[in-house]
Image (tube, rainbow over all chains, first blue to last red; front, side, top):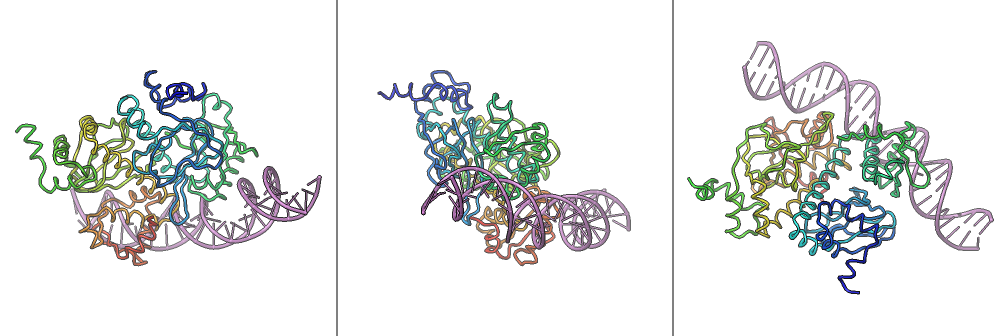
Length: 238
Length: 238
DNA sequence: CGCAACATTGAGAGCCATCAAGCAAAGTGG
DNA sequence: CCACTTTGCTTGATGGCTCTCAATGTTGCG
């Protein structure tokens, strides 16, 4: 199989359409999108598998297609800050050149699309629309971190949890938003390290949202959002 | 005076050398630096004057030269998060395209160098080294926000204050680092909104660091750092 | 001098961290 | 198939840190 043929064949129809609908491909001409897909490679990850490591050279950018990923940053003293939970529609590794500022691993079996950094950025030079999209994505990443900062700096435990649930719900495909069900494959300690709370306080925040009727939890790591409006207000989305 | 002459003459020697020593100009050839300076404009700001506004089109990038600036982001409900206190050696407005995600105003009389966005980014296309520098600066900005997130999420009040003082000290020119004196023109409420604390708790954090002998405060908005090592450990720099 | 703005300090309440115990589900080995 | 362990979640009790409300300095300015 030639490289050319591979670039046409390597993705199934679903992956291909997900990619073309992503923020990265928006407004791209078919020919341009084709050139972008030609340098992409599909990677499969097992649960827990590392995809990138803090401090390593930033040699690729990624788009999650299926599954969930966790991004975190650890300090010398063992403390860590979870930075994001990623799924389809998010981006990974777009920190401009240099080295990765964080590590990422799979929370579930995942498929991600990998773009080697040199080919990707060279393509961005040739396709202005692609470059615009990269810039917009950088902005979205920064905006996300700023929202996160705001939530941790200003909100109480159950409101921080509402903020996370609302964030995850917003990124769901429209079809899945309707039933208001999220899967949370990460542990309580991970959510705590994302929200700047201990695992116990995180657990109590779940209990509070549950007893207040805003959510319902199941034993299969899933949450049903029963009062989206109340969650939105708690999350204080602008 | 022609435009060409202006580009040679508009900065005094001190400003010029500060610019050439900045992260933005590192590794630039003299001719390239000259082209960059040719599109720069010096702006003077009075205390309190707004330099950029959240939501407005991002039409320029800035390098502070003298004075201190405050960057903040406000929510619909009146709450706000102070994002940074900037001085010489920092950057402002480098969020890639789109609109400003934050507002900034002068805490003291300031001079800043302004680069119009279109000319600046077009120059970055022509000068690879400049583009590398912009990428590195974007990385530094993101790294700064991640450090900030970590401090707010994981530290207690007096350690958060130590984190801020250490940050400000690190950015001081070497000559000023020696005497360990900082000027803090911002109010306690501003520092509190930066650290995710109330102004009262911020004040108590100052008192605690003072009684523990780590700092000494004067009435002219200045702080003397008396035990840099203890501050560094509290700030938990990796 | 008096006012306004800001900083400090105090008292009390509330929220979260810590230490600890109990529970449920999944895996392990006999 | 059943103890036994492991892992993760929940809940309780307690203490400490921070927020809130309030009063008292302090500085600078009209």
